[in-house]
Length: 298
Image (tube, rainbow, N blue to C red; front, side, top):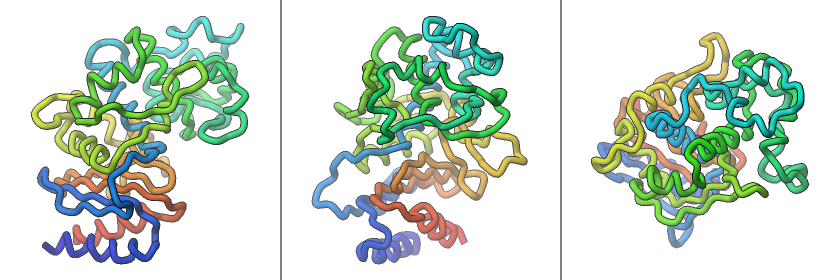
């Protein structure tokens, strides 16, 4: 196949360490057509911000179950954590704004390896104490805390640990057994990052997305939610194209889960294809992979 040859050409450069890719998998028409690994066995690696797209699917499931709604206000569920006089911008913040990274925060706030993370115990109160100097949906600001708070909201509404909620509804149906996910000091999932998965588990998630929320005949999340989540939800005049915790690809049709150091689940509906990548590289891994996809598409 010409498609396989094209991807193999990319792998020839990868084997030389340009860029440093650990695993590379391509599925088309439901079958794995390329499965390459630099390491001797498939091991779970930090997905970084690919984790956000899993929380997006969790939000879709919670909406399907009636636990949360897209336009409900976050403050209504966290009265105990609010400052004495919350600003109007804060009180108007909704689930939609968390999903689209348009909460009005002044700064992205700490996460991952920032020093402030190591001395802050209660991340929920920390979030509500920040300056929301912009009205919700006034601007896009990528903040891990938006995903974290969305996860905490679902957990609170479900009345159970978020990992247990996800195991039943997402992980087990996708054949992801005993997943690993880092937690905050209060025991909540980091949510925005810290989920560890193998390349096969990446691929299963991508296949479910490609198939409209179904994996091996089992419905995971509604097709209606995924249609919203994987389309641009920001004003068309903005340069950033973002859905509900998914990035929209340059063609405006396909989309991806996207993580630091080159972690990608690229879903290409027009090609009936999923490209999964796990890297250890600070360079433009997506740019190189996307250039190849464009060539294949002709």
